[in-house]
Every structure is written in C-alpha cells, then in structure tokens.
Length: 171
Image (cartoon, rainbow, N blue to C red):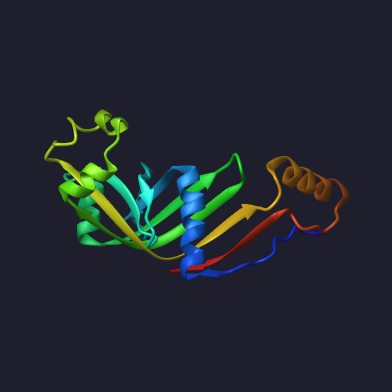
C-alpha cells in the first residue's frame, strides 16, 4: 500500500516570517507551551499579531504561571492549527513579558476585558515571542480536493501526493 507524500519546501528569513504570519494570524489561537521539557505546560492563547520581524504578540496576566515560567526559562513552543484549511505550524522561540503601556494600547482588544479590568489594569503584560525556527504543513488544494485525494489513496492503496506542502522554518 502506498503512502501519500507532500513536497518539501523549507523557508528562511522573510519567506518564513510570511508563512508564520499567514498561518498563525488565520488560526488566531495556539497552544502556548512553557517550561519546555518533561514538565512542560500548555494552554490556549489568543494571538494579537505577527509583526514584520516575525515576532508573535500575546496579552497575559503578569502574575500568571505562564509569565513566571517565561521569567525562569524563556524557551517556548507554539502550536497553531487551522483545521478548516488543513494548515498547521509549530514554532520554537524565546519569550519575554513586558509591561509597556504603548504595546498594551496597541494590542488591547475588547475581548481582553474578560480577563482584565480595562487596559489600565496593572496586571496586564504583553508577551513577545521571537521565533527561532519551526515547521509547517498546509494544503495547496482546497480542503475538499485534499480530502478526496487522501480517500482515493486509502481506497485504492495508491501512492499519491496528498495535496499538501510542508517544510522547516528558519528565521
């Protein structure tokens, strides 16, 4: 029985940043993992933006376990998925928590009111993740065509391209 295969396209520099921006901002939410290793901790986090340098920005409570873990070990991993388009991205990077009022103003949304008492709440921090590298997978075809190709390969046992593309990301 054959296996579906995706072509590999590794991306560097600006092309990697464009891919991160495209997939992460479409997915909007990720699993944000801190304390990387045997005791890593993951939680869902809403992305505010991927800036032109590829940094990923989040809002967080300065007193949270996540912020404590970032202070102790800045290495983080982010897992974004956009199932509606079969797009996935994994990012490894370094995080820092800032209480810069200009950044808080820039990334504040009404949705954040669920966790904070307005944008002047003294417990708000902005987390900046500077990506080092990662990996992505996305379909080139639309979801229906990609799924049809996978079903055809499964039923016939043939080896086909699965309608996707994947590769390493280096920033």
